[in-house]
Picture 1 (tube, rainbow, N blue to C red):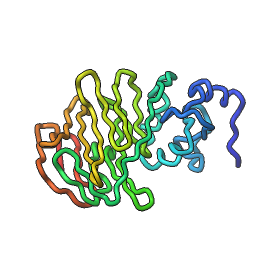
Picture 2: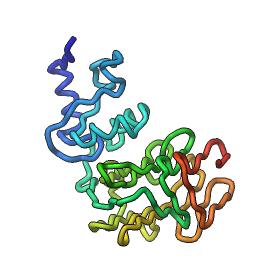
Picture 3: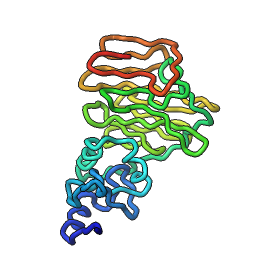
Picture 4: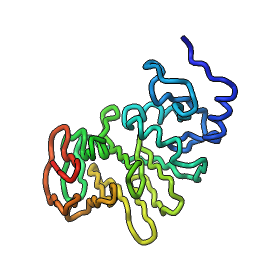
Length: 231
């Protein structure tokens, strides 16, 4: 069997995405991605398709859940924000990251919230970088995917250099990612279902005022949060 895209379906996809990747916003030739895989009887219909650039198409099935992929269809609400996607060059030679005041060594999943991988280290050839997925139920909503910072809020002020990214809203610093020599530092503050998570240079705070200070985490999954329980 072959995938069949009717003329009206192609027109509706084009109308919705306006010629931009529905994830990062780049305006190049786009792939049509099935959320429920075509090989698993996913339908070739508008609600099951996302228009993606080849780079996002390679990463999204590996990183985002099906519901998050579906959420991308409406994330930008047909309103392409200029320069909303910024490519950075923050890579490491080893799988060791400083997030808040804590060190994460050889952790594939750094933070998992309700079974969803939120912060993860990703290997690209012989280097590592950070993926961060904050979409549904998060405030602010930020996505760092395949070395791209992707936002959908034109009120964010973004400072962007080769080895540094900072996202601010007004005077509040929401997210900071920087590389110094071969060390990568991450500071961030967000709400998940109105519950505070905060990672700064002194401590990491989780819902229920649980704190981790100057800890070293090793293993596949470092921290898992589920229904008020941190493990």
